[in-house]
Amino acid sequence: MKSLKMALIVQKFGGTSVGSVERIRAVAERVTASHRTGHQVVVVVSAMSGETDRLLQLARALADAPAERELDTLLSTGEQVTIALLSMALESIGQPAISFTGGQVAIMTDSAHTRARIEHIDDHKIRAALDAGKIVVVAGFQGVDPHGNITTLGRGGSDTTAVALAAALHADECDIFTDVDGIYTTDPRVESRARRLDRITFEEMLEMASLGAKVLQTRSVEFAMKYHVPVRVLSSFQDGPGTLVTNEENSVEAPRVSGIAFSRNEAKITVVGVPDHPGIAYAILGPISAANINVDVILQNVSEAGKTDFTFTVERNDFAKTQGILQGVARELGAEDVRGDTHIVKVSVVGVGMRSHAGIAATMFETLARENINIQMISTSEIKISVVIEEKYLELAVRALHAAFALDGEVPA
Ligand code: ADP
Ligand code: ASP
Ligand code: MG
Image 1: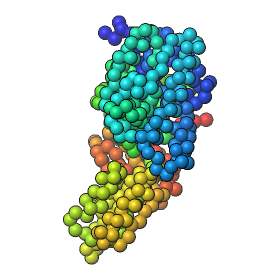
Image 2: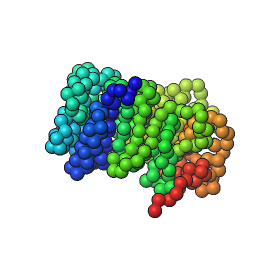
Image 3: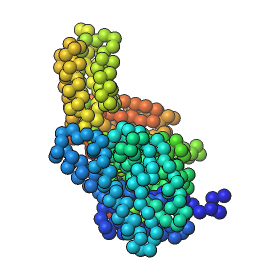
Image 4: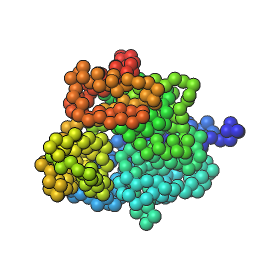
């Protein structure tokens, strides 16, 4: 029975939540209050807001393509600053605490620098410190590979550190404190009528995150789903129930669409006039995938006079690299041209209720047509429909779809 034993909770605070000494002091007070109610507390912190970007700029000022191993060594320092400061803040209010970097814990990852995956966490040091009555402060976003190299987990990776620690420690709760008071029907910064959800399923949150909703890193949701870690997203600035990410409940009828996600991190490439014969898709996409570039939406036109156009999207920061690779490929294939467009975005509607409701796609396309927004590409799965559109229509599309699927709440005063 859980009530008989002390609960172990993991609390993660993002960049804005530790963005100044005042904020760090407020975090120290909050986690101390949790500890005083009798819980064991592990705190995961991000770098102070803007710090990771600042470090990236320093690197880029010195090298066009900095070595990824060195980038990780650099970027991991942001979180090392906040763990030390938070531990000091805790000690200064009389709360025993100890900080650990990812390497010190040890959070073991593979060697994929800048996007490493956590493979194993040794919980010995954390348990010993908790049992000694301390609050344990762990650096988010970082780990160490089998050769002792510092690795990082990709942007937003502190969420994954928190959920992975909660799984490894069999924590009773994993709270993600951020600058919004929960997960909304869409990014509240784009649509002020967005509504906070009380709950969302792992599956829907996984789609929302992978389609661009950065409130949780995609991998953190994968971890939570796999190891059944209930995750709550809350505001670090105000009290409230937040949003619980959890398993689907059959009793409640799922709404048709539960959220709208979008991503600006998109670019489109078209190989024009390729001879249409078997093996074309492989010839074009093989070298892209060999370069570790993710291809997302793909479209091949019907052929005319034995030739076709082949279009696909990649992340915007992979655009230049992709174009470089394709110049050679296009020549070999006898294609007429390679065209690129970085002014596109992807907007998606997500909901497990789609499985049992027809007509979502029709409503989506009708809504965009009414706003005169041209759909360039479409991709669907069981619980989402995504469209690629021109970037300048992003806000309009999100708001129109939010209203069309009856997600609008009250406009805040
Ligand atoms: P942190 O630094 O705490 O990790 P992030 O900036 O990574 O915070 O994530 C929180 C941000 O996610 C919010 O400020 C909000 O703009 C954005 N966001 C995008 N989609 C959503 C959504 N559906 N619900 C809530 N926030 C969202
Ligand atoms: N500091 C890292 C970033 O800005 C990790 C995180 O905040 O989760 O991406
Ligand atoms: Mg984040």
